[in-house]
Image 1: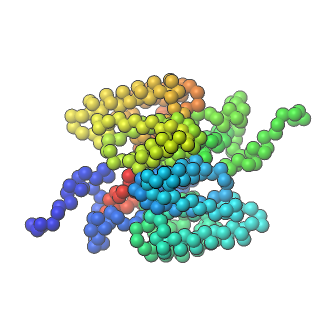
Image 2: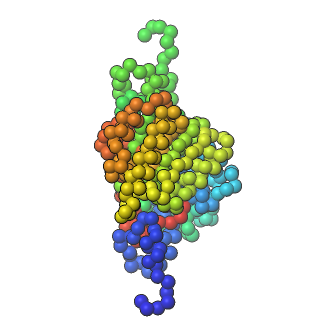
Image 3: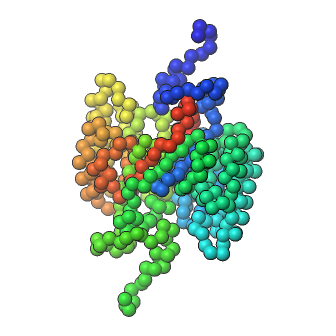
Length: 214
Length: 214
């Protein structure tokens, strides 16, 4: 305590989030712990799961991080605003790059008769690409949008996902969105937010509208 | 039923969100109801309230809407990623414009002794500016970030906010973020999402890190 090591009190008092409730005995320094790569899950029935993930991508872009988006949804209309915004940001040269991967029309959380076989194969191929990118440390932020569904439907093995994410090298942050996240994924996650639906315009006959829903 | 009016079945079947659970007898056409200006509230103790609001701003930008952000927070570090991203988008000329208003260093949800009087005055002046912009229909999307706090602390009159928002002219969407939203605001809202905290890195001694928290 009387040595010359720098005190951390300044950092603690100026952190906007304040002092952590407890400090774990994990042998890590504060800096190591701070820069720990995070697995983030946005789940629950409410709005904002994907929207918050793409908002997070704005922060990553500002830090100059390469961003990979893997979009596990069908409709071309969905995420069109976020996709165009992040593409413009990525192409601006003022921040990080953005790679936006759509899993094709065969990818969808809307199950259609006779297409399940293709969906499953597409989902697995998408996950295999993510694994290759994680191994190569291609991106610093991965947005795996609606990725809970292929896990829920058994198309992608949850144990494989959890083990791969736990063992991923370097400082690669991963955000997974979607309802009904598997408990094993939640257990592996560092940050979980549950978006709860309190009130929704659809309840009163409101349909989706441009600029709000897409 | 045998007349020549266009059927809406096509629209209903192609909507990504599907058919509304019920259609109210409010005398509005589907189009009128769809384009109804929305009051959206992101509340709750979890992450993602503001992030999802700024993600929504990406969609609004993509539609070419003028966007006004009113930031009711103190730290210059907070939202720095979203601010820079939205400023680059607004300046790109490829979508809507972005006006980003910070309420100054006096504005904060961190109450400091001897500064409360100034905070309250700043909050009121900020809200008066928002009222002027609403009356002039300056923006098509308003992000009132952390605006629940001045209401909670009595600096801004909740009844005035609710009445002003209910009576706002034109098609102006408003997103209010922050914990502990007043029940009267929730009652007036069209869409409410509660962000619940399930697991957070701060619980295990993790402190905020760039690209994630700001």
